[in-house]
Image: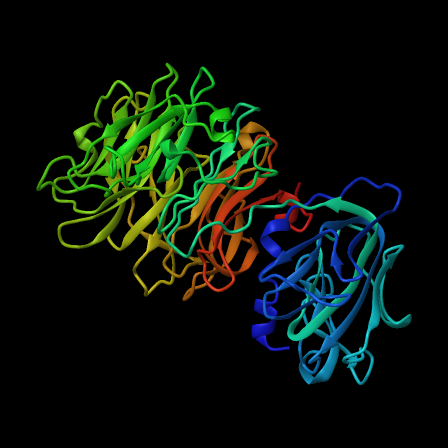
Length: 572
Protein backbone atom coordinates (compact mmCIF):
# COMPACT_ATOMS: atom_id res chain seq x y z
CA UNK A 1 0.00 0.00 0.00
CA UNK A 2 1.28 3.46 -0.82
CA UNK A 3 1.60 6.23 1.73
CA UNK A 4 -1.23 8.08 -0.01
CA UNK A 5 -3.55 5.15 0.62
CA UNK A 6 -2.66 4.99 4.29
CA UNK A 7 -3.23 8.70 4.87
CA UNK A 8 -6.31 9.25 2.75
CA UNK A 9 -8.52 6.27 3.32
CA UNK A 10 -9.85 7.40 6.72
CA UNK A 11 -11.08 10.83 5.69
CA UNK A 12 -14.80 10.27 6.05
CA UNK A 13 -14.95 8.32 9.31
CA UNK A 14 -12.72 9.38 12.08
CA UNK A 15 -13.82 12.68 13.57
CA UNK A 16 -17.51 11.93 13.97
CA UNK A 17 -17.02 8.87 16.11
CA UNK A 18 -13.95 9.23 18.34
CA UNK A 19 -14.72 8.72 21.97
CA UNK A 20 -17.86 6.58 21.46
CA UNK A 21 -18.03 4.75 24.80
CA UNK A 22 -18.58 0.98 24.84
CA UNK A 23 -22.10 0.03 25.73
CA UNK A 24 -22.77 -2.18 28.71
CA UNK A 25 -22.80 -5.90 27.97
CA UNK A 26 -26.23 -7.07 26.83
CA UNK A 27 -27.95 -9.71 24.77
CA UNK A 28 -26.93 -9.77 21.12
CA UNK A 29 -28.77 -7.29 18.92
CA UNK A 30 -29.15 -7.41 15.16
CA UNK A 31 -29.20 -4.43 12.82
CA UNK A 32 -29.75 -4.66 9.07
CA UNK A 33 -28.14 -1.70 7.37
CA UNK A 34 -28.84 -2.69 3.74
CA UNK A 35 -31.31 -5.34 2.63
CA UNK A 36 -31.98 -6.28 -0.99
CA UNK A 37 -30.01 -3.24 -2.06
CA UNK A 38 -32.26 -0.89 -0.09
CA UNK A 39 -30.71 1.40 2.52
CA UNK A 40 -32.32 0.66 5.88
CA UNK A 41 -29.97 2.10 8.51
CA UNK A 42 -26.87 3.68 7.00
CA UNK A 43 -24.93 6.90 6.88
CA UNK A 44 -23.53 7.78 3.47
CA UNK A 45 -20.31 9.74 3.92
CA UNK A 46 -19.13 11.47 0.77
CA UNK A 47 -21.24 11.34 -2.39
CA UNK A 48 -24.55 9.47 -2.39
CA UNK A 49 -24.64 5.80 -3.35
CA UNK A 50 -26.89 4.95 -6.31
CA UNK A 51 -29.80 2.53 -6.12
CA UNK A 52 -29.45 -0.37 -8.57
CA UNK A 53 -31.39 -3.56 -9.19
CA UNK A 54 -31.03 -5.18 -5.77
CA UNK A 55 -27.92 -3.28 -4.71
CA UNK A 56 -26.44 0.07 -3.70
CA UNK A 57 -23.53 1.06 -5.93
CA UNK A 58 -20.66 3.50 -5.62
CA UNK A 59 -17.08 4.01 -6.75
CA UNK A 60 -14.35 6.56 -6.10
CA UNK A 61 -12.32 7.90 -3.21
CA UNK A 62 -13.80 9.06 0.08
CA UNK A 63 -17.26 7.57 -0.44
CA UNK A 64 -18.24 5.36 2.49
CA UNK A 65 -21.35 3.33 3.27
CA UNK A 66 -21.41 3.20 7.03
CA UNK A 67 -23.66 1.16 9.27
CA UNK A 68 -26.05 3.23 11.33
CA UNK A 69 -24.89 1.57 14.56
CA UNK A 70 -21.44 0.79 15.85
CA UNK A 71 -19.90 -2.28 17.47
CA UNK A 72 -19.62 -2.23 21.25
CA UNK A 73 -17.68 -4.58 23.50
CA UNK A 74 -17.96 -8.35 23.29
CA UNK A 75 -18.62 -10.80 20.46
CA UNK A 76 -20.01 -9.65 17.11
CA UNK A 77 -20.63 -10.72 13.53
CA UNK A 78 -20.64 -8.42 10.51
CA UNK A 79 -22.06 -9.91 7.31
CA UNK A 80 -21.83 -8.25 3.90
CA UNK A 81 -23.08 -9.61 0.58
CA UNK A 82 -21.49 -7.64 -2.23
CA UNK A 83 -20.06 -7.58 -5.72
CA UNK A 84 -16.87 -5.72 -6.63
CA UNK A 85 -16.08 -4.51 -10.15
CA UNK A 86 -12.67 -3.13 -11.16
CA UNK A 87 -11.16 -4.97 -8.22
CA UNK A 88 -7.52 -5.11 -9.34
CA UNK A 89 -5.37 -3.08 -6.92
CA UNK A 90 -8.43 -1.11 -5.90
CA UNK A 91 -7.66 -0.97 -2.14
CA UNK A 92 -11.41 -1.48 -1.59
CA UNK A 93 -12.07 -2.54 2.00
CA UNK A 94 -14.29 -3.24 4.96
CA UNK A 95 -13.53 -0.50 7.49
CA UNK A 96 -13.65 -1.57 11.13
CA UNK A 97 -13.55 1.00 13.90
CA UNK A 98 -10.95 3.73 13.79
CA UNK A 99 -9.38 3.54 10.29
CA UNK A 100 -8.68 -0.22 10.33
CA UNK A 101 -9.21 -2.07 7.04
CA UNK A 102 -9.70 -5.59 5.77
CA UNK A 103 -8.73 -4.85 2.17
CA UNK A 104 -9.92 -6.97 -0.75
CA UNK A 105 -7.00 -6.19 -3.05
CA UNK A 106 -4.17 -3.73 -2.48
CA UNK A 107 -0.56 -3.28 -3.55
CA UNK A 108 0.79 -6.30 -5.41
CA UNK A 109 -2.69 -7.77 -5.67
CA UNK A 110 -2.78 -8.91 -2.04
CA UNK A 111 -5.60 -9.21 0.44
CA UNK A 112 -4.39 -6.98 3.28
CA UNK A 113 -4.94 -5.73 6.82
CA UNK A 114 -4.15 -2.14 7.78
CA UNK A 115 -4.77 0.17 10.72
CA UNK A 116 -4.43 0.34 14.51
CA UNK A 117 -6.55 -2.77 15.10
CA UNK A 118 -3.97 -4.83 13.19
CA UNK A 119 -0.69 -3.20 14.22
CA UNK A 120 1.62 -0.42 13.03
CA UNK A 121 2.30 -1.86 9.56
CA UNK A 122 0.22 -3.05 6.63
CA UNK A 123 -0.09 -6.86 6.67
CA UNK A 124 -0.24 -8.58 3.26
CA UNK A 125 -2.14 -11.82 3.85
CA UNK A 126 -1.90 -13.50 0.45
CA UNK A 127 -2.30 -12.72 -3.21
CA UNK A 128 -5.96 -12.38 -4.04
CA UNK A 129 -5.97 -14.88 -6.92
CA UNK A 130 -9.68 -15.47 -6.62
CA UNK A 131 -10.00 -15.27 -2.82
CA UNK A 132 -12.31 -12.33 -3.46
CA UNK A 133 -14.02 -13.00 -6.82
CA UNK A 134 -14.17 -10.00 -9.14
CA UNK A 135 -17.57 -9.29 -10.66
CA UNK A 136 -19.29 -12.09 -8.73
CA UNK A 137 -21.48 -11.85 -5.68
CA UNK A 138 -19.82 -13.13 -2.51
CA UNK A 139 -20.33 -13.05 1.25
CA UNK A 140 -17.80 -11.48 3.60
CA UNK A 141 -17.99 -12.06 7.35
CA UNK A 142 -16.01 -10.53 10.21
CA UNK A 143 -16.60 -12.53 13.39
CA UNK A 144 -15.24 -11.87 16.88
CA UNK A 145 -15.64 -14.59 19.48
CA UNK A 146 -13.88 -14.72 22.82
CA UNK A 147 -11.35 -12.08 21.85
CA UNK A 148 -10.43 -13.63 18.48
CA UNK A 149 -11.36 -11.96 15.19
CA UNK A 150 -11.81 -14.04 12.03
CA UNK A 151 -12.48 -12.99 8.42
CA UNK A 152 -14.32 -15.37 6.08
CA UNK A 153 -15.15 -15.18 2.37
CA UNK A 154 -18.01 -17.45 1.28
CA UNK A 155 -17.49 -19.43 4.49
CA UNK A 156 -13.75 -19.96 3.92
CA UNK A 157 -11.48 -18.68 6.70
CA UNK A 158 -9.03 -16.05 5.38
CA UNK A 159 -7.40 -14.80 8.57
CA UNK A 160 -7.75 -15.23 12.34
CA UNK A 161 -6.16 -13.08 15.04
CA UNK A 162 -6.47 -11.98 18.67
CA UNK A 163 -8.01 -8.54 19.05
CA UNK A 164 -9.42 -8.21 22.57
CA UNK A 165 -13.06 -7.64 23.46
CA UNK A 166 -13.31 -3.86 23.70
CA UNK A 167 -15.61 -1.53 21.79
CA UNK A 168 -14.84 -1.28 18.06
CA UNK A 169 -16.93 1.68 16.90
CA UNK A 170 -18.25 2.30 13.36
CA UNK A 171 -18.15 -0.19 10.50
CA UNK A 172 -18.27 0.80 6.85
CA UNK A 173 -17.54 -0.19 3.25
CA UNK A 174 -15.06 1.71 1.09
CA UNK A 175 -15.01 1.21 -2.70
CA UNK A 176 -11.90 3.38 -3.31
CA UNK A 177 -10.78 2.62 -6.91
CA UNK A 178 -13.33 -0.17 -7.39
CA UNK A 179 -17.05 -0.11 -8.07
CA UNK A 180 -18.80 -1.72 -5.12
CA UNK A 181 -22.32 -3.14 -5.16
CA UNK A 182 -23.78 -3.86 -1.72
CA UNK A 183 -26.71 -6.31 -1.65
CA UNK A 184 -26.92 -6.85 2.11
CA UNK A 185 -25.07 -5.36 5.08
CA UNK A 186 -25.86 -6.39 8.67
CA UNK A 187 -24.33 -6.77 12.12
CA UNK A 188 -25.12 -8.81 15.23
CA UNK A 189 -23.71 -8.25 18.72
CA UNK A 190 -23.56 -5.50 21.31
CA UNK A 191 -24.53 -2.62 19.02
CA UNK A 192 -24.22 1.01 20.11
CA UNK A 193 -25.66 4.23 18.78
CA UNK A 194 -23.30 6.54 16.92
CA UNK A 195 -23.48 10.35 17.13
CA UNK A 196 -24.89 12.03 14.07
CA UNK A 197 -23.85 15.56 13.13
CA UNK A 198 -25.65 17.71 10.56
CA UNK A 199 -24.56 17.48 6.97
CA UNK A 200 -22.68 20.33 5.34
CA UNK A 201 -24.90 23.38 4.92
CA UNK A 202 -22.52 25.94 3.50
CA UNK A 203 -20.51 26.61 0.37
CA UNK A 204 -16.75 26.71 0.43
CA UNK A 205 -15.74 29.73 2.45
CA UNK A 206 -13.73 30.99 5.37
CA UNK A 207 -15.24 29.87 8.68
CA UNK A 208 -14.07 29.98 12.29
CA UNK A 209 -15.75 27.61 14.79
CA UNK A 210 -16.53 28.70 18.35
CA UNK A 211 -17.81 26.52 21.17
CA UNK A 212 -19.33 27.65 24.44
CA UNK A 213 -20.26 25.53 27.46
CA UNK A 214 -22.18 27.02 30.33
CA UNK A 215 -21.79 25.96 33.95
CA UNK A 216 -25.57 25.53 33.97
CA UNK A 217 -26.56 21.95 33.34
CA UNK A 218 -29.52 22.87 31.12
CA UNK A 219 -27.48 25.20 28.90
CA UNK A 220 -27.82 24.75 25.16
CA UNK A 221 -24.71 24.83 23.05
CA UNK A 222 -24.75 26.85 19.83
CA UNK A 223 -22.21 26.40 17.03
CA UNK A 224 -21.71 29.42 14.83
CA UNK A 225 -21.58 28.90 11.09
CA UNK A 226 -20.18 31.92 9.30
CA UNK A 227 -20.03 31.57 5.53
CA UNK A 228 -18.58 33.35 2.54
CA UNK A 229 -22.02 34.22 1.15
CA UNK A 230 -24.74 34.35 3.79
CA UNK A 231 -25.85 32.97 7.13
CA UNK A 232 -27.50 29.60 6.55
CA UNK A 233 -28.42 28.58 10.08
CA UNK A 234 -26.85 26.61 12.90
CA UNK A 235 -27.57 23.41 14.83
CA UNK A 236 -28.51 23.46 18.52
CA UNK A 237 -28.05 20.94 21.31
CA UNK A 238 -29.99 20.09 24.46
CA UNK A 239 -27.34 17.78 25.98
CA UNK A 240 -24.09 19.78 26.08
CA UNK A 241 -23.10 18.87 22.54
CA UNK A 242 -23.60 15.08 22.52
CA UNK A 243 -26.27 15.30 19.83
CA UNK A 244 -27.32 18.08 17.46
CA UNK A 245 -30.41 19.23 15.63
CA UNK A 246 -30.43 19.61 11.88
CA UNK A 247 -29.40 23.15 10.86
CA UNK A 248 -32.11 25.43 9.51
CA UNK A 249 -32.18 28.95 8.14
CA UNK A 250 -33.09 31.28 10.98
CA UNK A 251 -35.56 34.21 11.01
CA UNK A 252 -34.65 37.50 9.36
CA UNK A 253 -33.90 39.08 12.73
CA UNK A 254 -30.90 36.74 13.10
CA UNK A 255 -29.64 37.04 9.54
CA UNK A 256 -25.93 37.80 9.61
CA UNK A 257 -22.67 36.12 10.50
CA UNK A 258 -20.02 35.86 13.23
CA UNK A 259 -22.64 35.09 15.88
CA UNK A 260 -21.84 34.74 19.58
CA UNK A 261 -24.45 34.28 22.28
CA UNK A 262 -24.88 34.14 26.04
CA UNK A 263 -27.75 33.14 28.29
CA UNK A 264 -28.90 36.02 30.49
CA UNK A 265 -29.81 35.49 34.17
CA UNK A 266 -33.53 35.54 33.35
CA UNK A 267 -33.12 32.72 30.81
CA UNK A 268 -33.28 34.80 27.64
CA UNK A 269 -30.65 34.56 24.93
CA UNK A 270 -28.57 37.52 23.77
CA UNK A 271 -26.80 36.92 20.44
CA UNK A 272 -24.37 39.48 19.04
CA UNK A 273 -23.34 39.43 15.36
CA UNK A 274 -22.68 41.38 12.18
CA UNK A 275 -25.93 42.22 10.36
CA UNK A 276 -25.79 41.19 6.69
CA UNK A 277 -29.48 41.62 5.84
CA UNK A 278 -29.57 43.65 2.60
CA UNK A 279 -32.78 45.58 3.32
CA UNK A 280 -31.91 46.47 6.90
CA UNK A 281 -31.21 49.85 8.52
CA UNK A 282 -28.40 48.16 10.48
CA UNK A 283 -26.78 46.40 7.51
CA UNK A 284 -23.04 46.09 8.17
CA UNK A 285 -23.38 47.14 11.82
CA UNK A 286 -22.73 45.29 15.08
CA UNK A 287 -26.10 44.25 16.52
CA UNK A 288 -27.60 42.24 19.37
CA UNK A 289 -30.67 39.99 19.14
CA UNK A 290 -32.73 39.34 22.28
CA UNK A 291 -35.15 36.42 22.55
CA UNK A 292 -35.53 32.94 23.97
CA UNK A 293 -34.15 29.54 23.13
CA UNK A 294 -37.66 28.54 22.00
CA UNK A 295 -37.62 31.49 19.57
CA UNK A 296 -34.55 29.93 17.94
CA UNK A 297 -36.03 26.42 17.89
CA UNK A 298 -39.42 27.56 16.52
CA UNK A 299 -37.97 30.11 14.09
CA UNK A 300 -39.57 33.14 15.71
CA UNK A 301 -38.22 36.67 15.28
CA UNK A 302 -37.50 37.11 18.99
CA UNK A 303 -38.29 40.11 21.16
CA UNK A 304 -36.12 42.78 19.54
CA UNK A 305 -32.80 43.57 17.92
CA UNK A 306 -30.64 46.60 18.74
CA UNK A 307 -27.66 48.27 17.12
CA UNK A 308 -24.64 48.11 19.42
CA UNK A 309 -22.17 49.90 17.16
CA UNK A 310 -22.45 51.87 13.93
CA UNK A 311 -19.21 51.92 11.96
CA UNK A 312 -18.41 54.23 9.03
CA UNK A 313 -16.66 51.26 7.43
CA UNK A 314 -19.73 49.08 7.02
CA UNK A 315 -19.20 45.36 7.54
CA UNK A 316 -15.61 45.56 8.79
CA UNK A 317 -16.38 44.28 12.27
CA UNK A 318 -17.46 41.13 14.06
CA UNK A 319 -15.84 38.01 15.55
CA UNK A 320 -17.40 39.07 18.86
CA UNK A 321 -16.77 37.90 22.39
CA UNK A 322 -19.76 38.15 24.72
CA UNK A 323 -19.41 37.84 28.50
CA UNK A 324 -21.92 37.80 31.35
CA UNK A 325 -20.77 39.70 34.45
CA UNK A 326 -21.75 38.78 38.01
CA UNK A 327 -24.21 41.69 38.20
CA UNK A 328 -25.99 40.52 35.02
CA UNK A 329 -24.39 43.04 32.67
CA UNK A 330 -23.54 41.67 29.23
CA UNK A 331 -20.38 42.93 27.54
CA UNK A 332 -19.85 42.40 23.79
CA UNK A 333 -16.37 42.92 22.35
CA UNK A 334 -15.51 43.38 18.68
CA UNK A 335 -13.17 45.27 16.35
CA UNK A 336 -14.37 48.22 14.29
CA UNK A 337 -13.58 51.67 12.85
CA UNK A 338 -15.16 54.29 15.10
CA UNK A 339 -14.74 57.45 13.00
CA UNK A 340 -13.86 58.27 9.38
CA UNK A 341 -10.11 58.23 8.77
CA UNK A 342 -9.32 56.27 11.92
CA UNK A 343 -7.74 52.83 12.04
CA UNK A 344 -9.31 49.71 13.50
CA UNK A 345 -9.97 49.66 17.25
CA UNK A 346 -11.08 46.97 19.68
CA UNK A 347 -14.30 48.08 21.37
CA UNK A 348 -16.33 46.67 24.23
CA UNK A 349 -20.01 47.57 24.22
CA UNK A 350 -22.03 47.16 27.42
CA UNK A 351 -25.77 47.16 27.26
CA UNK A 352 -25.46 50.38 29.23
CA UNK A 353 -23.63 51.44 26.08
CA UNK A 354 -20.27 52.12 27.76
CA UNK A 355 -17.31 51.93 25.42
CA UNK A 356 -14.15 49.83 25.80
CA UNK A 357 -11.30 51.56 27.54
CA UNK A 358 -9.27 53.43 24.93
CA UNK A 359 -6.11 51.89 26.36
CA UNK A 360 -6.96 48.65 24.53
CA UNK A 361 -5.12 49.76 21.36
CA UNK A 362 -1.89 51.59 20.55
CA UNK A 363 -2.26 54.44 18.03
CA UNK A 364 0.45 53.03 15.71
CA UNK A 365 -1.27 49.65 15.32
CA UNK A 366 -3.21 49.01 12.13
CA UNK A 367 -4.83 45.56 12.03
CA UNK A 368 -6.21 44.44 15.38
CA UNK A 369 -8.06 41.23 16.25
CA UNK A 370 -9.23 39.33 19.29
CA UNK A 371 -9.09 35.55 19.22
CA UNK A 372 -10.12 33.49 17.43
CA UNK A 373 -10.62 31.06 20.28
CA UNK A 374 -11.21 31.70 23.97
CA UNK A 375 -9.98 33.93 26.74
CA UNK A 376 -9.50 32.72 30.31
CA UNK A 377 -10.09 33.87 33.88
CA UNK A 378 -7.08 33.58 36.17
CA UNK A 379 -7.23 32.14 39.67
CA UNK A 380 -7.08 35.69 41.09
CA UNK A 381 -10.05 36.76 38.91
CA UNK A 382 -8.36 38.66 36.07
CA UNK A 383 -9.90 38.18 32.62
CA UNK A 384 -7.30 37.69 29.88
CA UNK A 385 -8.18 37.79 26.17
CA UNK A 386 -5.50 36.81 23.61
CA UNK A 387 -5.18 39.17 20.63
CA UNK A 388 -2.92 40.05 17.72
CA UNK A 389 -2.07 43.16 15.75
CA UNK A 390 0.04 44.62 12.95
CA UNK A 391 2.36 47.45 13.95
CA UNK A 392 3.17 50.47 11.78
CA UNK A 393 6.26 48.70 10.42
CA UNK A 394 4.06 45.87 9.09
CA UNK A 395 5.15 43.28 11.67
CA UNK A 396 2.61 40.86 13.14
CA UNK A 397 2.68 40.32 16.90
CA UNK A 398 0.59 38.70 19.62
CA UNK A 399 -0.61 40.55 22.72
CA UNK A 400 -3.34 40.37 25.35
CA UNK A 401 -5.95 42.65 26.85
CA UNK A 402 -7.11 42.18 30.43
CA UNK A 403 -9.78 43.29 32.86
CA UNK A 404 -9.63 43.38 36.67
CA UNK A 405 -13.22 44.55 37.15
CA UNK A 406 -15.17 41.72 35.49
CA UNK A 407 -15.12 43.36 32.06
CA UNK A 408 -16.30 46.82 33.03
CA UNK A 409 -13.03 48.26 31.71
CA UNK A 410 -10.19 46.76 29.71
CA UNK A 411 -6.50 47.54 29.53
CA UNK A 412 -3.76 46.66 27.11
CA UNK A 413 -1.33 44.04 28.33
CA UNK A 414 2.09 43.18 27.01
CA UNK A 415 3.06 42.18 23.48
CA UNK A 416 5.16 39.23 22.39
CA UNK A 417 8.07 39.73 19.97
CA UNK A 418 7.27 40.07 16.23
CA UNK A 419 6.45 37.29 13.76
CA UNK A 420 3.71 35.95 16.03
CA UNK A 421 -0.02 36.17 15.45
CA UNK A 422 -3.24 34.39 16.51
CA UNK A 423 -2.72 32.99 19.99
CA UNK A 424 -4.26 31.39 23.05
CA UNK A 425 -3.22 31.61 26.68
CA UNK A 426 -3.16 29.15 29.58
CA UNK A 427 -2.41 29.70 33.26
CA UNK A 428 0.35 27.40 34.52
CA UNK A 429 0.29 25.65 37.89
CA UNK A 430 2.81 28.13 39.33
CA UNK A 431 0.64 31.12 38.34
CA UNK A 432 2.62 32.17 35.27
CA UNK A 433 0.86 32.61 31.92
CA UNK A 434 1.97 30.81 28.76
CA UNK A 435 1.07 32.34 25.40
CA UNK A 436 1.04 29.80 22.54
CA UNK A 437 1.26 31.61 19.20
CA UNK A 438 0.97 31.16 15.47
CA UNK A 439 4.51 31.56 14.18
CA UNK A 440 5.72 33.35 11.03
CA UNK A 441 9.43 32.71 11.65
CA UNK A 442 9.74 29.81 9.20
CA UNK A 443 13.23 28.97 10.37
CA UNK A 444 11.21 27.22 13.06
CA UNK A 445 8.26 25.36 11.56
CA UNK A 446 6.48 25.05 14.88
CA UNK A 447 4.56 27.03 17.49
CA UNK A 448 6.06 30.06 19.23
CA UNK A 449 5.79 30.30 23.02
CA UNK A 450 6.26 33.14 25.54
CA UNK A 451 5.60 33.30 29.29
CA UNK A 452 4.58 36.03 31.72
CA UNK A 453 5.11 36.24 35.47
CA UNK A 454 3.04 39.39 35.97
CA UNK A 455 -0.38 38.45 34.66
CA UNK A 456 0.31 39.35 31.04
CA UNK A 457 1.78 42.84 31.51
CA UNK A 458 5.10 41.72 30.04
CA UNK A 459 6.22 38.68 28.09
CA UNK A 460 9.47 36.76 27.78
CA UNK A 461 11.46 36.35 24.60
CA UNK A 462 9.93 33.83 22.20
CA UNK A 463 11.00 30.20 22.34
CA UNK A 464 10.00 27.56 19.81
CA UNK A 465 8.34 24.30 20.73
CA UNK A 466 9.65 21.94 18.06
CA UNK A 467 7.17 19.23 19.08
CA UNK A 468 4.21 21.45 18.21
CA UNK A 469 4.77 21.58 14.46
CA UNK A 470 2.43 23.80 12.46
CA UNK A 471 1.78 24.94 8.86
CA UNK A 472 1.20 28.56 10.05
CA UNK A 473 -2.32 28.24 11.43
CA UNK A 474 -4.43 28.95 14.49
CA UNK A 475 -4.30 26.44 17.37
CA UNK A 476 -6.04 25.88 20.70
CA UNK A 477 -4.56 25.25 24.14
CA UNK A 478 -6.64 24.48 27.23
CA UNK A 479 -6.17 23.44 30.84
CA UNK A 480 -7.56 19.94 31.48
CA UNK A 481 -6.76 19.45 35.17
CA UNK A 482 -4.68 20.73 38.08
CA UNK A 483 -2.87 18.76 40.77
CA UNK A 484 -4.02 21.18 43.49
CA UNK A 485 -7.63 20.35 42.61
CA UNK A 486 -7.07 16.67 43.26
CA UNK A 487 -6.09 15.65 39.75
CA UNK A 488 -2.86 15.92 37.81
CA UNK A 489 -1.32 18.86 35.96
CA UNK A 490 -2.49 18.34 32.36
CA UNK A 491 -2.71 20.74 29.40
CA UNK A 492 -4.34 19.98 26.02
CA UNK A 493 -3.32 21.31 22.61
CA UNK A 494 -4.87 21.01 19.12
CA UNK A 495 -3.74 22.11 15.66
CA UNK A 496 -3.00 20.76 12.18
CA UNK A 497 0.06 18.64 12.96
CA UNK A 498 1.93 19.21 9.68
CA UNK A 499 4.61 21.74 8.71
CA UNK A 500 3.44 22.54 5.16
CA UNK A 501 -0.27 21.83 4.78
CA UNK A 502 -3.35 22.34 6.92
CA UNK A 503 -4.17 18.70 7.60
CA UNK A 504 -3.99 16.03 10.32
CA UNK A 505 -5.84 17.76 13.16
CA UNK A 506 -3.84 16.48 16.15
CA UNK A 507 -4.63 16.45 19.88
CA UNK A 508 -1.66 16.55 22.25
CA UNK A 509 -1.28 16.23 26.03
CA UNK A 510 1.37 17.68 28.35
CA UNK A 511 1.88 16.46 31.91
CA UNK A 512 4.63 18.96 32.79
CA UNK A 513 2.98 22.33 32.09
CA UNK A 514 3.85 22.50 28.41
CA UNK A 515 7.54 21.57 28.65
CA UNK A 516 7.00 18.32 26.74
CA UNK A 517 4.11 16.77 24.82
CA UNK A 518 4.59 12.98 25.04
CA UNK A 519 1.04 12.12 24.00
CA UNK A 520 -0.32 12.93 20.54
CA UNK A 521 -3.14 11.46 18.49
CA UNK A 522 -4.55 12.36 15.09
CA UNK A 523 -8.23 13.27 15.37
CA UNK A 524 -8.76 13.83 11.64
CA UNK A 525 -6.14 12.79 9.05
CA UNK A 526 -7.43 14.86 6.16
CA UNK A 527 -7.50 18.62 5.52
CA UNK A 528 -8.16 20.57 8.73
CA UNK A 529 -7.60 24.11 10.00
CA UNK A 530 -8.87 26.10 12.99
CA UNK A 531 -9.98 24.41 16.21
CA UNK A 532 -11.31 25.22 19.66
CA UNK A 533 -10.90 22.96 22.73
CA UNK A 534 -13.22 22.80 25.73
CA UNK A 535 -13.60 20.57 28.78
CA UNK A 536 -17.16 19.58 29.74
CA UNK A 537 -18.31 19.42 33.39
CA UNK A 538 -18.04 15.60 33.31
CA UNK A 539 -14.40 15.80 32.20
CA UNK A 540 -15.08 14.94 28.56
CA UNK A 541 -12.81 16.70 26.07
CA UNK A 542 -14.47 18.56 23.21
CA UNK A 543 -12.78 19.76 20.04
CA UNK A 544 -14.69 21.87 17.53
CA UNK A 545 -12.75 22.11 14.30
CA UNK A 546 -12.78 22.80 10.58
CA UNK A 547 -12.26 19.80 8.33
CA UNK A 548 -12.93 18.41 4.89
CA UNK A 549 -12.01 15.85 2.29
CA UNK A 550 -10.81 18.12 -0.52
CA UNK A 551 -10.13 21.18 1.60
CA UNK A 552 -10.12 22.13 5.28
CA UNK A 553 -13.23 24.36 5.27
CA UNK A 554 -16.00 22.00 4.14
CA UNK A 555 -17.46 21.18 7.56
CA UNK A 556 -17.31 22.19 11.19
CA UNK A 557 -17.22 19.08 13.38
CA UNK A 558 -17.49 18.55 17.12
CA UNK A 559 -15.49 15.60 18.46
CA UNK A 560 -16.17 14.39 22.01
CA UNK A 561 -13.69 12.00 23.61
CA UNK A 562 -12.08 11.11 26.90
CA UNK A 563 -8.59 10.99 28.31
CA UNK A 564 -8.70 7.21 27.89
CA UNK A 565 -9.04 7.58 24.10
CA UNK A 566 -6.22 10.11 23.93
CA UNK A 567 -3.83 7.97 26.04
CA UNK A 568 -4.91 4.57 24.65
CA UNK A 569 -6.40 3.62 28.01
CA UNK A 570 -3.36 4.52 30.12
CA UNK A 571 -5.15 7.37 31.89
CA UNK A 572 -8.78 7.86 32.82
